Image (tube, rainbow, N blue to C red):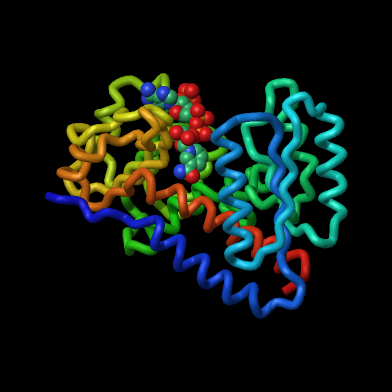
Length: 280
Ligand code: NDP
């Protein structure tokens, strides 16, 4: 078997084109504020891509690049200002934050209707109880790739490797909400391969190159590789692409899989937040 490659770049382009057309019809533009604290090089790249994408689709954006030594109080002050801004409908705080700032304290200050990433406790609780109001962008992108490729989720065995609040847990919730039988694996899981070999849908979100190879994949499975790792300047995922291609029916590449979908979902969520706030 040779897997069909799931093209996240193309899917993201289609979504962005649809949003661009919709935004062009709006008198007042949706506005996204992105806040970056510190010097994390990957975070810098991500916020720049997000900002560029806003420009591409006609979404108004403000980018706040704050120094590493910014205090929690200063950051909360900025969030308060953005909460009150009429130009801003969606607020994104790029994670991780420097160690001296509590992510929890910051995320809970974002106005609930401007919580574009869905990381606030209220939106986490909503998702856990099956209400998908503001869904985190990467997990939403994973589900959209399954939907766009006609991959049935209900009744399937889904295995998610990784249990972070940003990716693993929300992906598991979304799959469960769609009636998959979901197993979540993590660093303490013993015999990882025994779980992955039973997966019809395998989502890998760890950050370890080649954690999963073809021998660990069920023949005909759908494999979504969320991982982003840099090796000698080249981006690779968590799945050994060559051997996985021989076992899976569908496989996402890295780059060009989940990554572009994350950005497209951010823009989609920005538009959703705008509509909610404007009562449209
Ligand atoms: P975290 O580091 O927060 O979480 C990693 C998870 O992997 C943890 O739950 C950890 O388990 C688990 N883990 C670590 N080692 C193993 C192992 N050997 N076997 C099984 N599980 C293991 O990462 P994130 O969730 O934030 O991100 C995961 C990956 O996805 C990263 O590569 C990141 O760069 C990428 N990413 C990609 C995005 C995209 O748009 N494509 C967006 C966001 C992230 P434990 O909980 O026990 O520690």
